[in-house]
Length: 299
Image 1 (cartoon, rainbow, N blue to C red):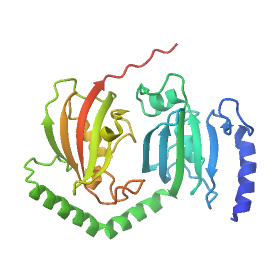
Image 2: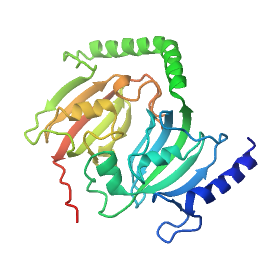
Image 3: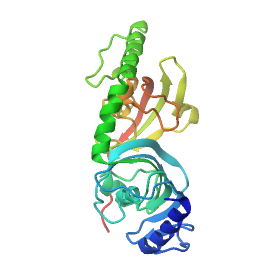
Image 4: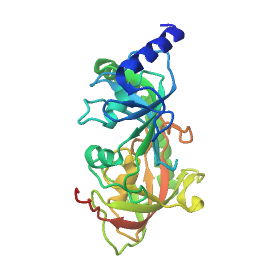
């Protein structure tokens, strides 16, 4: 469909879907859906068909506070489901066609407590909404996803084997004598922690430095002087290897972990392009705090 026709279609569609199309006093520049989601389209893709529940989507997503502080950014592929409640983040994904980018403002309490089943982090003020920016990179049906995955795994088999060779050589050269976990993570505790162990739902605060096997750093909370805080056990917060490692630690503990790519950024690499596909990484971790979540009572 020509781009100008798609633009006309979206204008007409927005008149049907949105309860109003003007500026909103609370969030200028955004339109509002009937279910209470504020929405601002930033880029229109070439395709016009939005995804359906059960489709697999690849998205670039950012979680942002009202003060424009990004506390999560990543690229994820997952299967869509029907929204569980009005105003759910699932509605946001279902509104975007391939190539579209948009900013959404949703209810923070609903997102954390209903979707993630977690407490609202302390760095978000009570009553503040949550901004989520989404770029819809790809939409595939279940059958397309299964076929693409099988073909891709066959194609990249050699790359995965090469990474295993590089990691094995690194372990030998560094004389690392700890055994990897069942998932493939090497966990080396360098300072014993005597505080609270981490449990699901805890609000944890960590310092970390991430680097490649050649010693080059790619990220450091120490250099930013800004520890990272997140709700342990919730989706799309940290890479799998970090979550696995932090779950083994106590407050005050320090550790070095070595992660193969399937526990880090996998066969796609990071959304920023800093971490290439099939790249093993090292993290130096320090667990500063692990606090049990406390849900506020309903008024």
